[in-house]
Structures are given as C-alpha cells and as structure tokens.
Amino acid sequence: MSPRTRTTTAVDALTEALRERIVARAEDLRASGRTLDLGDVDELADRMVAALPTVHPLDQPLGPFYDTSGLVAWLGISRQALFDRVRRGTVLACRTADGHLVYPSLQFGRNGAVRPGVVEAVGAFTRRGVDGWSVGAWLTTPTDVFEGHSAIDYLVVHRSSPTAVRRVAEAAASDAATWAA
Image 1 (cartoon, rainbow, N blue to C red):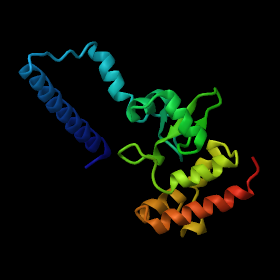
Image 2 (image 1 turned 30 degrees about the horizontal axis):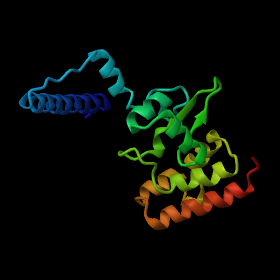
Image 3 (image 1 turned 60 degrees about the vertical axis):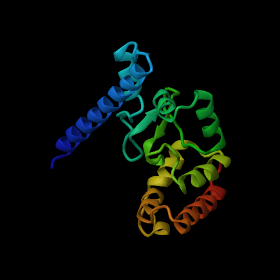
Image 4 (image 1 turned 60 degrees about the horizontal axis):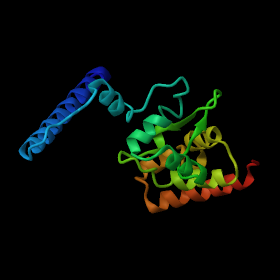
C-alpha cells in the first residue's frame, strides 16, 4: 500500500468516524427535543483541522510542528496555560526567526501528553536557559549514549520504560549542566 493510499484510507476512516459521531449526537439531541446547531461549518472544519500538525519548512528533523493555535485547540487549553507549560519546561517550544512559537509534534503522545522522558529532558534544559532548537537537536541527534539512537528513538524503542526514561533524564541533566545559557 502506498503512503498516499494509506493517507486516503486514514482520512476516509476519520471522515466516517466523525460522520457517525455527529449523527449520533444529533439523534441524542433530537430525542431530548433539541437540535444540533453546527454554526458555520467551514469555521468548525477549520477548528477541527487545527488539531492536526502543519507542514513547516523546518520539519526536518524536528517536525512536523504544531503552531500555538493548533496546539491550544488540540489540547483544549488556553494560550496562557500552554505558555505556562513552556515556561515551566514541560512542553518544548521553538521560536522562529519571526518570533512565533512552534511545537515539535514528536514530543506528544496520541493523547496530547508530553512523552515520558521528553518532559524530563525538556525541563532539565529549560532550567538552564537552553533554547528550544538546541533542546530539539539534543532530542533528535543519534548518540552512543543511547546505543546509536536519538533520545526520542531510544524512548520509542524501549517503550518509555522507567529505565529508558531515567537514562534520558540523567543524560539530559548531565548535558544541560555543561551547557551555558
């Protein structure tokens, strides 16, 4: 199956799943004497698509990225809550040349939580004042420390086991201690 066919199949499956859920919601509302008002359908579709990562010229090796509005929509939090997570070092953000923040999608699991091990690494570097691009490079650069894998790949290979998370966290803390802010 080609990548295009897989994508089309996934989009079709998502479209069908959304259709089923919307119809079920409309029926539930109708049963209680109410109607489903979707408002501006194009606006609703735009908000739904905002939860998907976007294409960005800097996608390799960190991307794809979420932008702030897309990540806020996906996580269902306020901009202020997201910026607080960035400030505390629990979400990795990279500032573009034009001042916008982008968020590498590789840090998130399917449920929107930052992957175990990544949050500890991001926190270690953030506390030292290391910029997001440098942290992203650290997370994605293969090294002997992780058996020839990057920190991200090492966590994936080891299914974010407590041992793998601890190893990544310790390596991040050690490296962050030697990096100047």
